[in-house]
Each structure stands twice: as C-alpha cells, then as structure tokens.
Image (cartoon, rainbow, N blue to C red; front, side):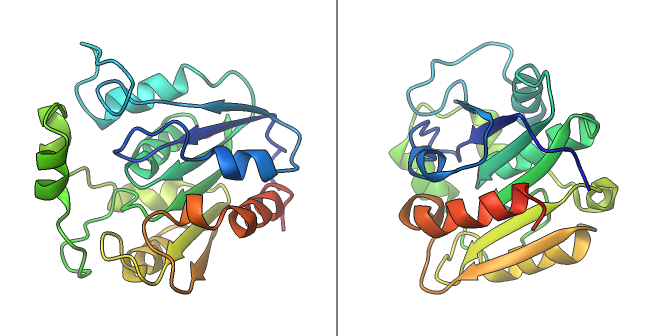
Length: 204
C-alpha cells in the first residue's frame, strides 16, 4: 500500500479554472495540505515564456512536490498528472484522473474534436496547446500507484471508452462512471467525487 499523501494538488483542464476543484476540496476529509494549480497562458494565469508544452506544465507541478503527494486532475490536467507521476513515482502516491485522455490516443474512441470551438472562444491560447498530441500509451504500464478514473457517460469530449482504455492500460486503476454526467463532473458531482477520492486516498 502506498504512503498516505500529506499534500493534494488539484490540476484544472484547459479552461485553467483554478476554482474548478474547490467544491470537491472543501468536502474532502483526508488530512493533507491542499494547493490549486493554474496553467500559465490559460484562464486567469498570466503566460510564461518557459511554458512550451505539456512537459513544461509537468515541471511546474513537480516544483510544488516536496512530500508524498496525490494529484487530482481534470481533462488536460490528467496528461500533466501522468507525466509528473512518470517522472517522480517515488513522491506521487495516488492519481485521480477525470474525463482526460491521460495521454492515450483517442482517435478511434469516438471523441468529439472540441479544439476548434475552444480555440475560437479563447483566442489567446498558446499555439503549442492546440497542436499537442501527447501519446503516453506505451508508458502507462510503468505507473504502479493507485489510480481512480472518474467518467461521465454523457461526455462527448472524453467518452467512457477513453476511461475504459486507461483502466486496461494502468496496472492499478479503478473506473467509476457517473450516469448522465458530462465533462464537468468534477464540479457538478462534488459530493460523490469527494467521497470516492477520500476512499481512494485511504486505500479503499
């Protein structure tokens, strides 16, 4: 069993919304320091010259990790979380990944291409993000830590089939599907998400 994390880092999706995970964080009973990360160039977080790709974001996250830490990640944040866990497996104890590619190829999983519409609504997005096609499929088996996968069955952006593929690729993963939930389930289903994360962190 992995050590109990003494720090929780919450990672948003491409919206960069650092408030996204607040409802879940407020409901958690696990005793750990909490920190909400923002992405430079996304949402309200100012851009930074050293951010040139997903690996740069993972480096930012790793700079916050100085003790046993669990990562809770939404959508794009899930790719960053997987990269961070691959780089520092000795410090990252648990992953919670919600509605994310997690670095797997989604081209054959009926996922909606949301990027053009999102880019049109967010014209200042960094170009690297729109071009990113990070594929970590062959490295997922390296992750020996417990992974909680949370999906909604009404999410066209990251369909349940994506969560199922991650569950097959990750050695210690558990998939929970929320009926009727979409890409915002981490916010809209905060009560149940918090209960599942608490159980996950306690080794349940």
